[in-house]
Image (cartoon, rainbow, N blue to C red; front, side):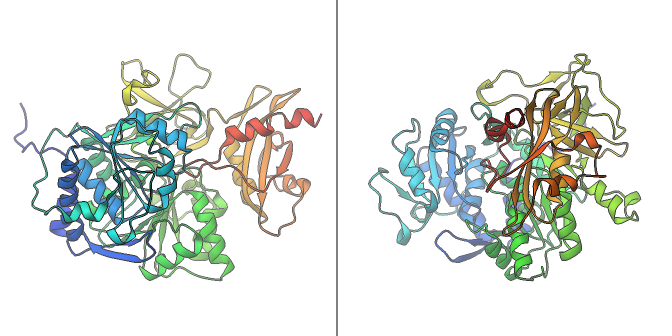
Length: 550
């Protein structure tokens, strides 16, 4: 017997309708590319989104077709989030940090029809405009007064002109919640990037989950500043969660340096932020150098790569800011876990509590996970004892089933019951309380004499040294042990640090045989388009370093 409840599809447009109706006067503040600060309300944003939905249709975009963006975090970008998906088209957020050749490949693969871009990226647009195959229309996300002069983009349109030509009398269409809503591509550190196609249903369910107290804990009392880009997995879902909960949004635009971020935190009284560790390094360096404090910010979500415990401790002890360690992937919409402690952990000594908070955390409702033996072809699940280490597999209603256009074939691994699990590529442990701890990426793990060494643990120790700015640990070829850990280190400005001094710092913190064999000091570690360290490049450059050392 079926239940007798209404059947109402879960659509992204419903989030904006809710925000307009129940939080219409809530502010959205944006630092614009034009150089000023823009303020509007959810009510004004909703009206502009309806007008943009009509403008997109007037450009000939049909339901299901892809509309691309190359833009920073800002109100116009958020209006496109709702205008495109809400009208039945598919929002495709392109990553401007990619090489132009990759941008062309991705735009062609997605078959984008229209591309909206911030003025910052005019040179990139000029470089690709004559090369992309399917994009018919380019729109500069600005007003008429700031339209650029260019001869390389034919019939360039103006965002505000498109809006001015429409009224906001528009009803969001109702359709199947399983239809595609947005498209993001993986970073493509190995091979070509692959498309991950989200649905309205998966996005709304993900939004419910991340807003929960034991996830990102968003509410109408929050002022949220997403440092994580809106072109990177939809800013981890925060533009959707803000509408669902009525939180004030503050967008940093292109100003991601420590000074610019700190000024916005203080003037807009930000309570919560989110971003990758490399961004927070810059912010902490600025705050420390200028002897500053945070007036209102009390928590930040750090993900994308592991947060060094030393950074977590600095935020908590010096600035009274709670770090929420989170983990996910583009293929997971992206949030999968959050390191929110349980009641049993509240009274623990700081070191023990921080050890729990330094894990990647517990699965949010909707995500199931397990670990299986790395060398076990049977795929048997390993125990949740905090010790057994294996490949991490996940499943859930906002986790990929296959890549866009079936690139790479079926990615899922079936279990004994025929249920599909997505292999994350991470190596992890899970303890009895469900806290998952990633010890390495499967491609980054170091196998020394047949034994596994986790590179992340070694990086975290190196990062705890007061003279280290950034550290990466890679597997370097070794004549006797096949592979041994090699540290690649960037020192803090003006710091004097020797190889022996740094290696001595590991004594007593790990098993002696885990200690890296050598240290290479560099000026910079290469970062990918989402702020992650590019260990593949480091392996190419330094993978034979130990052999060369004899």
